[in-house]
Image 1 (cartoon, rainbow, N blue to C red):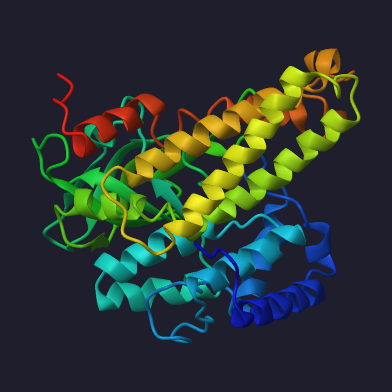
Image 2: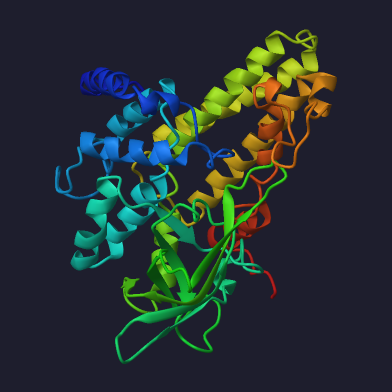
Length: 400
């Protein structure tokens, strides 16, 4: 199978590189390399401004299934989107704060939303002006999404929903303008029935409270979000269709977004390899074999992502992908500290609660600490294996 890029893709590569080089200047240059998993809290103000710059350049919404330029965006092929992502990563452009709206909500609205919802929300995302967060997981219903208890009652007087409940592990909630919330709108319903996919504005001070969760890495990428009668006007796909919409959204966390994620993984692996080459353990054959395996597995994930780019995956495809990259990234975090030897076991000379790791190790300790959660968030490995067993292999369902 030919995984090479064509002449049109290479022309785009030059154009993307030129645009990024010219625009990553001034305050945006200072935000280069900031953000991303494990450091979403860094440089948010500058990165929000950068989102608007990307919007003006037409670089947001490249893969949306809408006419080219409908919302001011360029329309790129799947391989073109990969080329853009590669150049973006190579120049260490700021971590995207608009990726949830662009890559998750917008395609969901295009697939399931009404024309009015698309016209209301897609332009703000395409301009980089409105940021979104995802209200799925709850205490007691993290990986088991069908067990959520957040409820929403529709007021017959004005037709608005009043949302009450708690969400947890909500990325970017402290900075988001909107949240798409999976809530139970049918009283007495159970599991995946009676759910709705609601669009909730976050600027409701007396009705929404956001509490950052401090992690063992010392940072607060995730948040608890408490809803106390928060108002929502929009239900995507119609009331009671939340499970269908939610599952459609989860299926979007593949393809180009997977390749973009792997570009970040490759940069992290390069840093670990460089640390190994300059360490006292550089001649350790067992450690070298593990690093080679890590490199080979990442290349295999890339080829598989390219092979399946744009293809319809089966019901277990997202679960298989999550198992692969979650375990891979966690092992990389373990290798990052192992190649450092004893130095990786010591904390900073001036320890503080918000900085429990050593900055001088090229982020090795932070990578180790953050990746401990990779096999848990977004659906734990146990849940992913159950999905594959039940929906793909047809094994008996787990007793509940």
